[in-house]
Length: 314
Image (cartoon, rainbow, N blue to C red; front, top):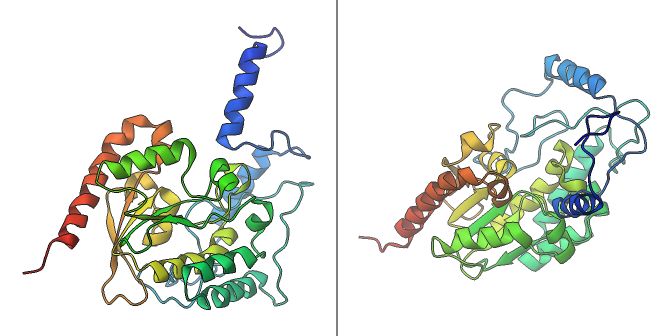
């Protein structure tokens, strides 16, 4: 049924309440912005940005500090970071809060501070305290809790997701709620649980409205993720979702292309690269259940590698 003056459906009061509940569970916390957005203008600006020549060095890696490259630092403002670029701001729209820093490139200054802060952590509690004290990332200012990690860091198995959702932000624990229940079932299917694996995220703070983190936000979190991996020293890593796979594997393809692929991750203190397998995020599988069969294949691959590592040597 549609109203005479609009193609939008007319909702009953019960349906409208159900829709609002659905929005809340999906993490929507802003329905109307203060100023209108011209989507046509934004599309034109995106097209112009893509057509403009890149000023970054062709030899630079988006996440050179993680997958096989030097661990010296995070990407600069001009280096590409996996995923979509931050949308251009329409005329009159509120600006994103500026990053602190006194140099010509404030992002580089803040990333340097993040590397120093993360590098000084000698234990996981030290690193968590460092994250709690790091207020330079805009996500830290809007999140309720820092979502650090859960599980057994001595297990040798590390699960890395993307970013916390609304439930995780409220509780300060990775993968709770419906997505967490599905992850628990996925792990149980290959003989794992939260006492035999360690779970964390690329981003420790929930992005408002569950949006994708911006390139700058990812760059600010990379030093802490890198140090997190150094301290846990996993023997196997499972990357859940596109952002985790792109970050850990230093790739730009989407998760449908990256899933089922193995890569090597450089971890401090390990002479050989740590194997990383990419698969779908549980939240994606809840929306796209037909891809669960592909995730099951990936989990079987992961289990086979686990058993290979556990097998006694000759």
